[in-house]
Image 1 (cartoon, helix red, strand yellow):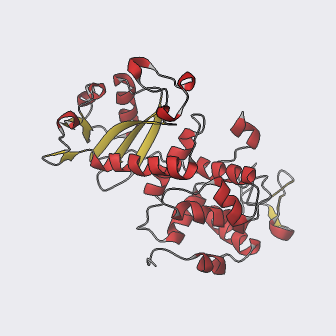
Image 2 (cartoon, helix red, strand yellow):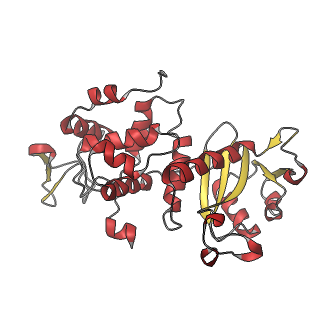
Image 3 (cartoon, one colour):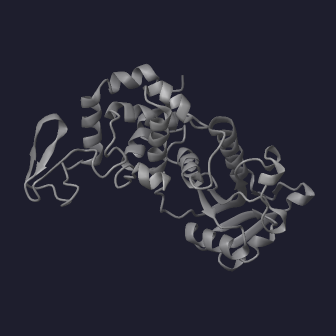
Length: 304
């Protein structure tokens, strides 16, 4: 086993029950002591039983769950941590059916747990820099597998799927953004919003990237002529991201609706960034836990 990975047995030695998980979460999310989720203060707080705290300012009881993806969930905290462990160590993801079997809940509840975890994955606000590879992709069900009456095509015969723009920093982080369509304006605005100006952008020769040279140093490769590397210019890294994402969506999840596709994309990009396998499992878990604050989402909002 890799030195950066811990086994399931080792995981449950570290987090054997709810109390150990609660103490760990409090240490990560409240490094300076309990914080009232309403007042946002640490003063005048009294510990109570079973992980509850009383804010004497607003007269409100609270726990570490409030204001996070764990709020109003009946799943024990150490099982939540185990679900995180499974998601961050599975290169192509874990299905709700498999998670339900692993942690002993219904498939519906497991799907909700996974969507809450994905909700915590999309909080990377830092811009990419240096050499950044950019490419676009359509994600969704295969049109050839649909009945003719259900096949939907957009402009220029392009399948009506979810358009995603991906950006990968050479030797660094990855970002992927859901867009309405890969037009020139949309592509330019997406890259400007996520990449520092003056960076070097590598793309193929799709005409939608024609305006990027105004903000960045733009280099291209011509895939139509089987050119994939030219003097160090390539988009192979970002295309490898699509390969992993497609294998996960088709082989593990089988179906991801357009409505929720953004969360699945966030999951895969998070796993390439803070969840990359070069980091120790516990370091990846620490990063995941840091992202759960302020990401509470209800089932009603999720399915609305």
